[in-house]
Image 1 (tube, helix red, strand yellow):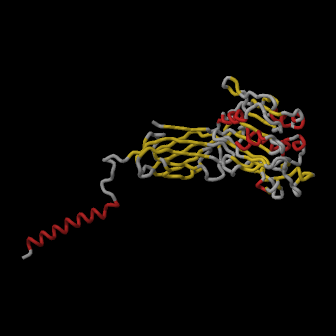
Image 2: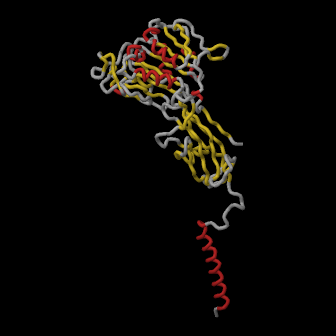
Image 3: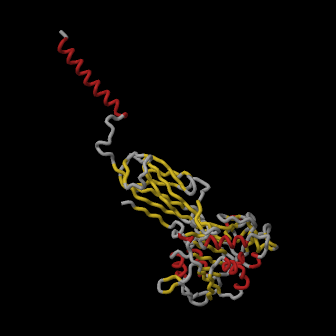
Length: 392
């Protein structure tokens, strides 16, 4: 029986809009009022909780929120266990953690769970060449995945990857070449970091929440407001969300779609459609990859083929290839894990059978030398017999 498994392809785009805001400072609601206004303009419903109180994230097995924004604090022994937020993320929910240089160990451990280490307590990023009026307010255009047209201002501590960058953990905003934080310099300093789980939940953290403060957001010469909007849309699953549709395979020159079995060495055609969520039109549109990075694997335990799919019309990616001269249970696999985009995992099982006894060719080209040697042996024996009988 055909097995079709299409996992995690675009579920993020169908998110509800309940956002939990967690902080222990009333001043945050004034200094970051524009952040909350932007969230409301995008249709999110905000609920504010005090960090010093126990925060119940679910009730009777149902999650009460879809996203969380946490403002870090120096308060120790918080009543809400760290595991609650990890379970929240594991359930497919999204988190933005805005750090601060003097934050408590609770938040450092939470950042570490997502692959980031904050620099030494109290140490802030300094930049004497690219800054906004003071070395504490550094400027950078070193931005990954996001498209930001202006310099971004940053004030706070730096982050480092733990242990290194992968397709799930990466620096979204990094320091300029002249920035330093303790004994770490330049692009090795992360201002804003992002993590995407295998369940396509997203996590964003910073070493200083002033990056989204009113002071920076209202400065028209900076790209912080653009960064804020992009961060919200990316973290809350409105951009870079992919899905797979219309997976098809068939024999070349045949109209039968998705047969359960093939025979060895047949020429077959495989195709699928990859679509991307467009938050502006609120619908899926064709996804166009900038490189040949949509790879098809034809596997039986190990891949027998690993080849890039070719871009077809619209959102289609397709390929024609010949099956190996090997029978067994195989899978068509496409595992697309481009950094910053939702992961696609497609697997479909098919059977490849050997040729029946009446499907083999009568004569094999590669056996012609053996045919010739057989007839030469018979001819030589006939010549020997005739010579022996009639030679006196």
